[in-house]
Image (cartoon, rainbow over all chains, first blue to last red):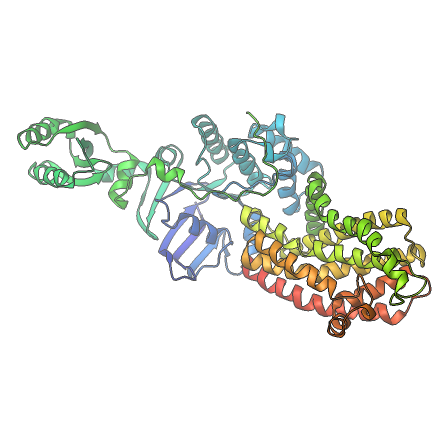
Length: 341
Length: 258
């Protein structure tokens, strides 16, 4: 498969000197479902902004579908679809009008556009509210409208920047199913950023993990999990995170157990990695007991992408991180009534 | 040509937004209507008493062109709030990842502004007519008036667009717009002739762009006032302002786009 996105040594330095992306290289194959993972501020959205021609790169070389991003921005914009992290729909236009406008800006028109928009409204489940103003939609409906708008012109390459953040589990599952279908049946290449490990695991064929502007790991979800090489045991300590002395002591004690290959800090406790970890749980409990360290919980797990993420970035994705996203701009004027789905 | 179709589609979009938020139109018309109804009554006797106003012209006849221009001027100064909205809501970015013609984004905005000023001016004209205002030069004269007002507005909307692009704050656009409106309006011949003013103020008003534009509009409405040179100087002033303000807008817009 030829590469539809080719990024070599991308560097992006903001005017205040922040190095948001620091020498990133990767390629995305045509037809691939590609995932870009990273904690907040890792450089995911910045990379997407550069790839979608919204931001000029500081240095590096990028081609999309063979077009140099510097010279052929217009050709690139014709074949990409973009859903940005902050949902953007025009609140004064109806759902249908929002999609029609996107089509018009892609120089589509006539019956072809009308039919395409009707199909898409059905597909994203907004057909029955299509002629109501988008300002009255719920958050999930806006998100689906935004996704539908990105597809009007049948893009070859779809950029999705955290498409399901803030959605309820049901809407999320529906979008996953739809994205899989788009990728498999219509052959659309999808470039997805996400903070949900489950989402990446389920959808992406290949993952790149970015942290502090650098790629720290890449591979298929399976190979990345295999790389962790061990099961994990996550322990929370009684009066856990508050007592750092206890934590330190626990670390030392765990260091004495030879089967343990790695010890990482995690929320309110520690995570250790070991081959066949289930066999050493008893050892851990016993040594903790003799050293007077009290455990409040012990969890055993086979490697997940969460472990991959923790291993490479030293962070776990936390629920509160997901909720403290930038608040979207509030339009002034009358408050808009939400519509129940 | 994608610039034409893109501008058209963006204009239609803006029009829908305008029609669906009639409250905004009401707010912009509120002030000129108060001026038209109350101001012209308040000053009606001054205009005939002191001999300082042109003889044979009622205050309504004298002031309506000024009120029309003031409306064009102040609504143009709010134009930047819509670009702030597009920037901060992400709509602008959403457009920029499509092949939309970049100039069409600005052009769509300007065409909408011009259209809005013409609609508002027409409403004011109808109301003024009901109060007894007439346009001496007829339908052609009304057309010229509306063109002068629309272009005058466009020239100034550049200031507000530039401030909007630079500060990304609707409050700043409103603030600076409001700050500019009244000093410029009162130090012009929009509402009273220069003869009424103290010397320093009449000096200011003689170089105030509003005075030039209002002369051109009055030439159309008041019988036997027409002087071709007034129209020419109005457009020279409009062009000079437009070059500066729209130039700044274009420069800042390009910075945002790239």
